[in-house]
Length: 612
Ligand code: G6P
Picture 1 (cartoon, rainbow, N blue to C red):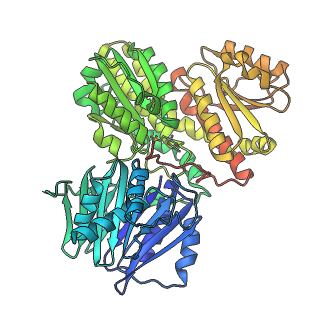
Picture 2 (cartoon, protein in one colour):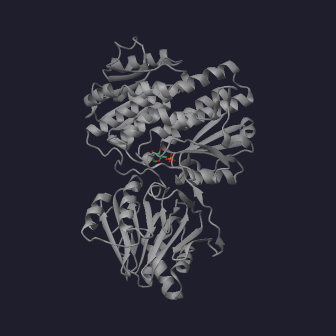
Picture 3 (cartoon, rainbow, N blue to C red):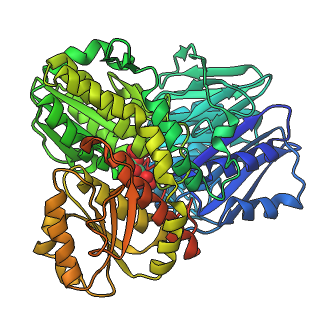
């Protein structure tokens, strides 16, 4: 949801900004822009469309500057066009801002500023920032840092903000509340960005800016203060992000690369957490809270999108192995209810990005009501990670494709380990059963590898169904959330309408949709629901639906009942989602590519949803 990058140093800042915007494009891609200061003159360059449009737009200007900032936008207020693109400037074009987030009181501020004579050019909420800073700057005759600080005190909402001013041509001011901002510290140079991806090729030394902090970068270096102007000492951290991890590595799309990375990412998610010699599971991040988890009266999972689907799968195995009641909540719904939280409830927030605004807000409500709030995130140092009392990282590596794939399987792996650690503590699982599952879990990466070999067959099936207008995905038990996830993948990137349903619920509605035009994907692996799902397959067959079934390797029983069989390796029932989702990810991918869709950056979607 909007990407921010800024640079100050000896290199050509404009080149760094363009390169950085390309790395951040997965966060927003409807328009892009940059501001730089050349010969003491602030200039703005912005273009509707992808970063490539901006790049070719500025190419001939041969901009040379040691200080610049750029923004890639995901529209919230106002349509994607050149005017609404960031940076925005004051009327005199001497102050410029880039902003990620939402200003909730922008209507009131806009009116106030208009009454003072300010003319607005864009339809964005962000533009009020720059006029407000300008107004305070003129009135108070102060420096730009003070004007920014004072302006922020009028803002209700979320922001990651960078300000540049022609009057202070070596200065970058940055502030955050609710939207992420990382500061990179290089050799005589500084970077500001929404996440570390555009920074890692220059430096691994970073400072994560906290809410209500303001950073100033100028010839005196980096200074961070709180909102009351009290200086703070920055906590410099070393990030372990490799450049290769954020490049396509020979794959046509990030999504395909990330699907094929799953044997490794699942392996990394469990690495060091299963002690085979002692038969124990140890999640370091939860060490001090495992007793509290084991004594929980209830576990509430919070998440959005794919992370919510992971929670749904987790509900099955937490109840099965830990015998703790589980509730799975959409963070966006939870935060606006008056949820009942009891003393022994534990809340676990699940998020790939660690920045989802609804999840963050829901966590806050749970904490205010007295719950222990834990986090399971992929992005190290993200807001959710920092706002949780404790938690675990996924270690899946950066996920750039907007449609989540490897984060889903890594989430399942980590959640599974958490459940088993609790079960081990509570002794709700027998030792030999635990050993069997753990051994099976360790074999999952190799089995994912095998499932990935279905790629060519799936490509062929995709070519048959690429023009379908609707798809239905059905599963039962552990595979019901996988059906939801399969449908989500397809609609996200191919724009085909797809619904996921618990297979038995089909007869209460979706069955009315079935005819020879309707492809129905069944997840029908050999598990405790197998016989039941065969009946559901028959119901679809009787109505001439086209059946694609994900089945367990060697299953011949379904050959005559289905049109296409996708065989995945056999595994322990509760681990099936780690394998059954693979063909669904691949099918969504191939169909989207065949329909000419932009797989990594599907329309209207963003990777990191930092607005509610
Ligand atoms: C967006 C992304 C999804 C993701 C969801 C939740 O909608 O496009 O892929 O599942 O946000 O994001 P989170 O980072 O909290 O898992």
